View 1 (cartoon, rainbow, N blue to C red):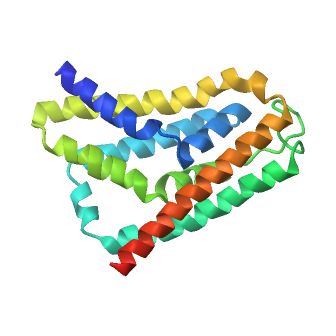
View 2: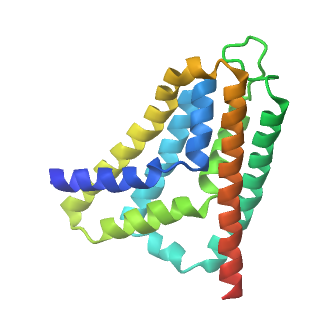
View 3: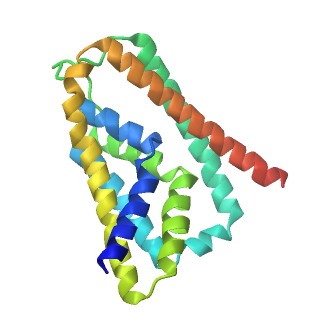
Length: 210
């Protein structure tokens, strides 16, 4: 059963480690030290819920609903384009807001931060593809006991990654005392967000054209 746990850990970890909108967002919050625990906990909770549903077989239902996936992709693309433009704007402004530990820096309210985290996490069809379809599809091939170990391994990988990324990013803080480094990071985040949004738009176009 340990091999099944390791399999779940590696598959889940391999899917979520790739730098995407959610990971870029967590990295930035970790560097800012702004309500990191809440962001990591919410990302893990969403991931855990979706993985659990996928392993229990719910993913096959979503695969049969093109309307749901298209609608989600449209909203997700719009939101990620907006967030990407915000990142480019922060980069354009330069050193106006990003010295870590600056007493005058403006922080988001917890409610706004959690809503942004939810939007970045859930308005992305890829998260459903990874958790419900891929991980869930693999888990569905396993027996009862194996499925439980596979689920534990998958959830453990999610927990380690999100909290590790959120808190380990603090080690990079000395490099981010320079506003120029923040300009680079915000520019990269903007590119990542817009790139993913473009992929979502192409996904909808292909679905509607077929």
